[in-house]
Image (tube, rainbow, N blue to C red; front, side):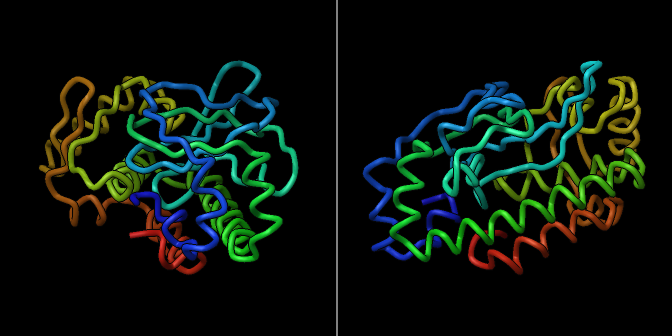
Length: 231
């Protein structure tokens, strides 16, 4: 099983939810929730990447967290009925397991291990979002771009990322011309190859050297709280 949150459950506890899990192929750009939408399903990514976007009234948006195979989207709806606080959108297509919120809530009432995993994941995701707030305010675009590429690569195990210029601009909260300039600078340094809609990572250690400290901070947070689910 690729989703490491599900794989971390003891077999007997996983058995409580296995019959209700359904595989779904999630295409790039698919909207899972918008702010205010009731969360009626939880998604456990396997090889897709889902972004949580914070939206402004003028239409501006910026990413607050990235979720891949180490976690789940909408998981707190297993504790109590929830409305989404952000936009959840698929940024790298792939597969995920989907389960109804009520079914997962029923299993959580019967499984201490599942409740513990939900609590730990919520804490890790909160730390991720808090770090993103500081990162977006304090760090330059190039460092944040490198952080995002590394974070995405960790979740799909591929050095080739299908990322449009428009998507990268939304993730970083900048203009597309800024993305072009930053990608060009990183390509000139030999760290990436960038062509229309595709980024190839050529030098991971070099990217890590340019990325801001937030990449390591978020990763360590997941490793501390969910040691069997990340990496």
